[in-house]
View 1 (cartoon, rainbow, N blue to C red):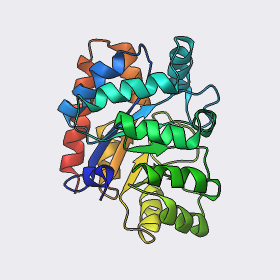
View 2 (spheres, rainbow, N blue to C red):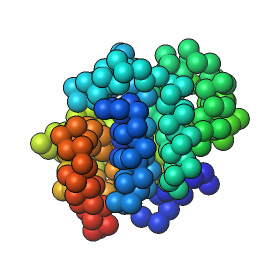
View 3 (cartoon, helix red, strand yellow):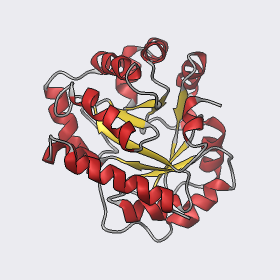
Amino acid sequence: MSRIERAFASRKALIPYITLGYPSPETALEVVPRLEEWGADMVELGIPFSDPLADGVTIQEASLQALSRGMNPRLALEIASRLSRKVALPLVFMTYYNPVFHFGLSAFCRACAESGVDGLIVPDLPPEEGVDLGRACEKNGLDLVYLLAPNSGESRIKLVAGRSRGFIYLVSLTGVTGPREALPKGLEAFVKRVRRETSLPLAVGFGIAGPEQAKRVARVADGVIVGSRIVQLIKDDPGLGKLGEFVRGLREALDSAI
């Protein structure tokens, strides 16, 4: 069992996302230890990319600012290395295939392992084309996490179930990241449809705006991923008071889900 799988072992996993380099490279070094203190079980570290097809307005704007201030994969690896010495929770990079391919698949995976990163999420990498990256991840002890959407067919679900390591990332809706007033009515059925094909933990992201939605997700899934709302709170309140209140509220919601 990997460190990522262990994060799901004892409770519903709370998985916050932050954009590395936003609003500064030092922000992650301050925020991630606080997220662990407030109840996070794993953290997604977003490496910004100039053509982020899965990201909504909030994360797109954060990524643009981070890129303009010099964030890149090598700096992301340096930050991850410093974080891995400060926190015990697993760290997962979320980025796109182009930066990984440009870095070199084997070199990037080796550098991730040396920096204490536990896994990769690459939204624009279909499982049919992920064999080489999967091998590089496996060689370096990394989990490669694939995504499924509500409109994924049965054959795609089975393929992702066979290729994912650590957990499967379920996108709650057909669209980009960003909080929604309501989650889709068919979310529970979607999670159950995937559950029939795998014993891996299932974590749901995209569209989750607050504790009530997180609680609904936690009733059927093993983990809840929250990104845009957290990035927005980091922007709105650099003192992190509002972020702390929000994350603690998510933790309580997940712990109370039955």
